[in-house]
Image (cartoon, rainbow, N blue to C red; front, side):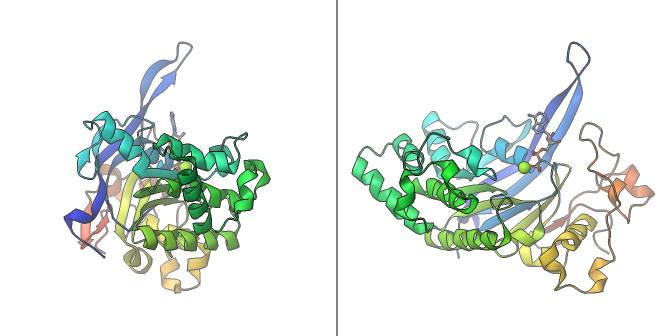
Amino acid sequence: MPTGENSVVMSCENISKSYPVRKGLFRRVAGQKQIVRGVSFELERGRTLALVGESGCGKTVLLRVLLGIEKNSGGRFLYRGRNTETMSAAEQREMRLKVQMIFQDTLGSFHPRMSVREALEEPLILSGVKSGSERMATIETVLGQVGLSPLYLTRYPHQLSGGQRQRAAIARCLAVAPEIIFADEPISALDVSLQAQVVNMLMDLQDDYQLSILLVAHDLAVVRQIADTIMIMYLGAIVESAPAREIYGDARHPYTQALLQAAPSIKKGLTDENFTVHLKPGDLPDPANPPSGCLFRTRCVRATALCAEAAPAPREVSPKHVVLCHFAQE
Ligand SMILES: Nc1ncnc2c1ncn2[C@@H]1O[C@H](COP(=O)(O)OP(=O)(O)O)[C@@H](O)[C@H]1O
Ligand SMILES: [Mg+2]
């Protein structure tokens, strides 16, 4: 597996995203709520980076910003070392083909009146494949890769099961030979046996194509098999980021520890000691009105007076293992 500078296909530095908060009869802007807070990462060729955090923490907003669906409020995003904001239109088109997205809601991501064949053909037409027989050959290849019979080509999205639709969605991504796939909770709507199948399929495809995957999940159990690196997000900030084995074996942030505790299939392998850390009850704080100091302190069982006063600085506890907690060393 290649390492080093050349294998980074995508990186972002200090990406943030805020929305205006509107109030009153005239919907005047009364402030800002910051949803994504200074996220930085590198995605390497052929690797999987997982982004994990509870519902509402800002995962989808981050993906939308990375895809250019929404404008970031700060930071920069590099695709193959080039700044996406200063790219030429041609480079942006190329990037849009090379970076593909799989959504959680597969029914919503297919046009209801397009057959599977039409849905798969569309990106090929957009990417300039002129010959119909060439398009058909590609479609048959990618269908085979996701294990769907050509019989499904004439079906419509609502005639497929959730698992079949997710396969068709992945096939549609693969048709344009992407380099990077963003998968936003791609398996959370599927039942457990299908989840494993889809994850295994993604891993096989990754091997075949050297795909880089940014996989979003709200649960640490789901990404265990496939992630090389894991970022834990809380209230829009990355609170811990590390090689996957360190997240599962040596989590330092109290929030990561709480997530591990909440992941049912991981629980079995852990000892009681890992379960002494609990999360204080309550919801995510309102992003428009975040806690002072450490963002996590209102739900942290270890919080002290220091945590209300000062925001912790990111600390590298071991190579590539960064934690945002005043007590990360302990
Ligand atoms: N267009 C928008 N305008 C204002 N707030 C938004 C917008 N989109 C998302 N949000 C808010 O951003 C937060 C994070 O949402 P999201 O990224 O969807 O969370 P998740 O981690 O579950 O994917 C939520 O509080 C949501 O209400
Ligand atoms: Mg989401």
